Amino acid sequence: MAAARRKKKKQGLASPVVFAICLIAVSITGYFVWAVARQLDLKWPFATGASGTGRGRGIYLDSGMQRAPIFDRSGTLLATNTKILSAYARPSLVPPGDEWVAKVSDILGVNQKKLSREISSARNFVWLKTGISEAESERLKAADIPGVAVVEGFRRSYPYNNFASQVLGFVDQEGVGLEGVESFYDRRLGSECKDVERKDCSLHLTIEMGVQTMAEDELQRELARMRGEEGCMVIMGLETGEILAMAVSPRWDIERFWRDDQAGFSNYAIKAVVDPSVFLLFTSWVAHQGQVYGQDGAVGPNNTKPSGFDFARVSDKFAVFGPWTGDEVKAVDFNENMLTSMWGLGFGQLTGIDLPNEDMGRLSSSRFYSWDDVLQQGMAASPVQMLRAFSALINSGKLVQPHVAFEYPKKGQMSYWDFGLPAELGHGQEAEALSLEFRQRLTSSRGLPFFTVRRRDDDGGTPGKAGAQIMSLGFWPEDSPILSYILVMDKVKEDPAGYVDVAGGVKKVLQAAARLPMDAPDYGGLSKK
Image (cartoon, rainbow, N blue to C red):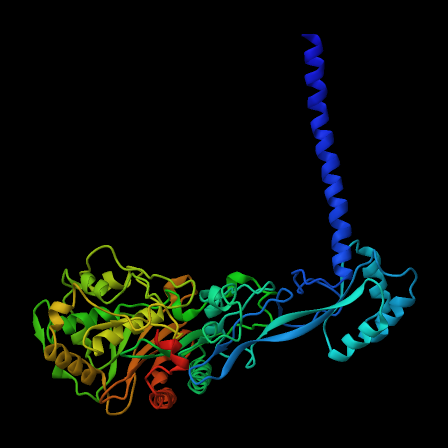
């Protein structure tokens, strides 16, 4: 019995020893196999984005890995791959002495002392320089220094720098999409794309470069004029849900994203930051067939001429600039169906837009009895959600699917309300007639925009200092609209009454967008799947 126990004890002691010996053997083997593979220039995948002397700017992908290109509506290239050459060294394989260091320093134009220090501190691998020229690569290869070689990798590049950055997004140093369509369509553009030259790998956006540029410039001008800190401008096709422009400010800097806090990257257009209270006015007006009903009876819609836009101040925190008088707005009947109507317009739900990290928004859980109730509920919606709901009201109740790429899996889908406003809108000619009346109500002969103002003093800022949020909704052309738009300026310091003076620039963007073909481009039939 004692002998058996001693034998069992010896076996127990032997197991960790055997395991340790095996682990050491595997480590040594791996070390030398890796070194030999590098020396033979075998194409093993490894990231070229590691730190090293003279690291270049940009986003570096794994050696041999590429992503499919991204184009705009007209076929302009917006994202592609740029070949990048990088020099590296295996300290265990380089010749003794510093003669080779001086030669490499001369070829690559890097500091010799720094190079020596990095080589001596590295055990297995060190980057000498990323983003070297073809000439430097050829000279280094001709020098034939053991342990020193050149590897080919790829950098994701954006020819127009930060153009439409919140739509395009960016990738990390391993080529994985982090934001925008680079993230939403990551598998299509990356891992599932075996040949980037294949047309069914590339992505074609619904935005158009010229209109997008105009929208970005106009947004910046309006923000500067009103001293606003952030905002967006989105233009969408009424029948298709195609986003023709999505300008967001502040824009992302694709060259700095890897240095900055990732939490700071958000797309204002899809965040729940806008007060949707005005839709209670809209839905009440539609529900009563063009009349705004108060508790004491109907208030006729003709009290204000179409060109008589003015501020209807609901409270010291909220005002509506449009064709309704203050009495009309304040006399809104907050009936029990209002929240149902809001839900029918898509509030409190995701729009399903093909961009990551979309906010759902917030609706009240209890019935409203006054504007004070409304303004204290903390309701919120994203600008895209607001635009979708507004578009439905002016387009006979159709809720379209917003999207920024023609290859969107849900593109072309169109849903109709199953509850809420459909009963009030009716069907067919009745719904079209009411939508037409609603559009006429919002059309001003002076070309002024419809918009709301919400003070932000209650957002934790200093009273009178936090600024205001201006939200404008509209459509184009006015007689037979094919486009709708939303413009939001946030943390505005100027008097919102001055906003009407700069509305002309928005119309120029809409006029340019309306000239674009509304039919989806063919792209070899790929976009019509």
